[in-house]
Length: 382
Image (cartoon, rainbow, N blue to C red; front, side, top):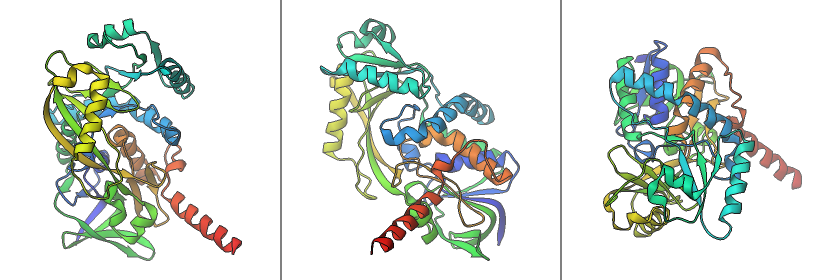
């Protein structure tokens, strides 16, 4: 039986980033993935690096997202130096567009709310916006400018992560699903994967939307669910974009080769991963509204991915009430952005038993507490 310092379940951007971080500490680390590493949500992502909240539910996430954005340049630079592969990182900023009669009011409210959260954002005139993106000259919408935001190509990022992790002697086993966790004396002591048994001082559950399927303990501590997101890649018939455009309906993310990635849907469709005409229509309608010249663009590719949602759509991060078992999953639409800070937190938990960042809001134990609280309320009311 092989003995490990850390066994990581899941080879997406979270699992691979964590493996690399631990490999740098010269720990014996193996990553287990049910398919090709990085082939699920990480492969399907748009790669936006934005800490701005999409809804009030995202507010607890802002400090964590901002912390991860700050360390992203160093994170990518170390990857590219280690493996010689570009991650296509850009910090060109984001233009957020507000259409309709109430556009200016909505823009102003958005700017003020983001400033209260400590995020860099400016009101932008159409003239100034055209200076950034000349193809917006026909728009009459109100705009906000997020200068610190950026993008990365998730597929390039994953290739770099895997190469860098393997350089640090991390073993990555694709096509090797974990079928059981091992326990002894109330502690998690390893796992069973691909018909083999592995002993591990620490096990990190980072299997995205599949986390809840690994074992009964996983379902209680990391109740993840798949949330389907469809995407389209377009090539404009004319000038492209230099930076992200987004609205409440959708977003456009430019790639260095001239493609524009347009997204996305958010569908509770179970584990059914496919592209639908209705999903494509919604994405294209929003894309053309944001950037009208895309009406005659070439459709290069369409795909879908399964984001890892949770009951409160916040990540599940940290040690559990089972000694030896940690969780790093449920990042929903923010896995690419949160990869560097998640890896750093897991390293601190494993090496030091604590973290500098207060991650209490993301603890795996919050679901157990809510379940016990609901049960107590039910019994009291009976």
